[in-house]
Image (cartoon, rainbow, N blue to C red):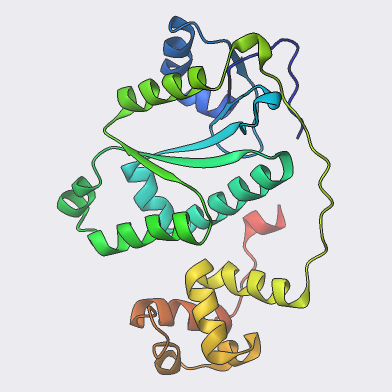
Length: 240
């Protein structure tokens, strides 16, 4: 997917994000920023810079606290983080995640463990090297993006700069980790591999043996065990 610009702009808004939240576009324009709306390979907003300034364009993934919690539960968060990092490496962007709203509401309203929420944030920051900003709500997110976009230089100096980066082939070690992350997530995958050494050993492990790994409780161990011991069934949607 390629991004095309005919004239300099301050912010590119992902077309899907714009269709769901057109208010961002309205506020950005009202503040004097130049906007382009088109599909982004990852993230919701891309803040451009003057390539000669030494600053990187900022690729932002925006999440409400509820979307954040849901994406942890279904492991979508780690896939999105991986896409954000890959896109940033490919085009020399600075990845960024904004979590919008008071995280404590998830603890009160949905009985989320604050430890689980904070561990997810520290995984994003330490394992994926993605800065995370928690704003109070949509208005503060808008205000921050406007201020950030204006701090990155004059509109007329901004443009996309694509760098050709040679993509190194994955090593066997990389592929092993990639497979483990697909069923366990980035943190648990490393812990499982350190404990069991090979994918085969993880596949052959019992629920009780999986629970010996730090951070793997009975529920998670059961889920991993079922992945390798449940018969796959073709459904009508798969055929289509």
